[in-house]
Length: 283
Image 1 (cartoon, rainbow, N blue to C red):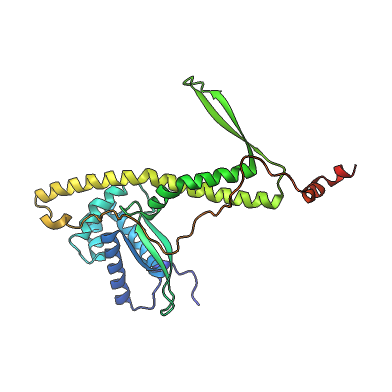
Image 2 (image 1 turned 90 degrees about the vertical axis):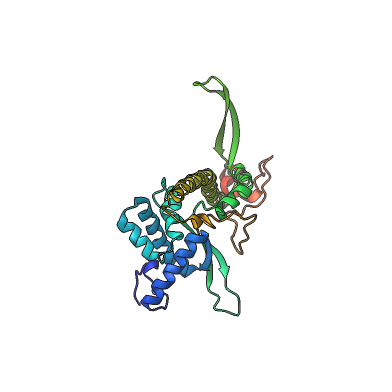
């Protein structure tokens, strides 16, 4: 058995010519639709190459254009989209242009292969953006409930020294009336929730910037079409319209938190008192 083979170096049970043709077709479909569903193995197989193509498009050298054209089957509509639209959209990013989301398995009558949705980050139908827009407020409420279980919150009213306006400062103090196991579980959920909240906030900030970059790129392409650098029908179906709803099979919730009463801290049980304060209770 050969170890240490990267995902983009897998053979996928195909001969070289078939494998390269498969890669080119998947890359072209991904650039055209900006979001496709395929098997997880194929999604991982093309992710590295898609990242490489966008990095080369941002450089814009003639040799890079030749490489991109060869990888995308020389498509006259897809290559300009990479060189202008995607390069403009990701000009402030160094990497991380492609995202893979697990999406269940094939049916029982087939090979039950793992499926994934591979998409370009900040595309018009970005799944994570839709999730953040709908679930960020609920996730923040769950995070507050976790923190209320782990900490005692005290709101301090202070005065801002720079502006002189009143402000509030939340002081968190560790609670010592919960068991160590409960504290450990709450800490794990707190870290996970903070990570997802930070990710959602980044997406909500970067998504409008991507739409503005797309508009600027399209305006530039219209000027180039007027100067006869590209054919007139280039922009037909160039940008995919935003869908009303995104339906995903099995995208699990990132954090599962049970409802916690925030108003009053739970009273410690008798076994808890005997375990941690037994030597004081005996006296």
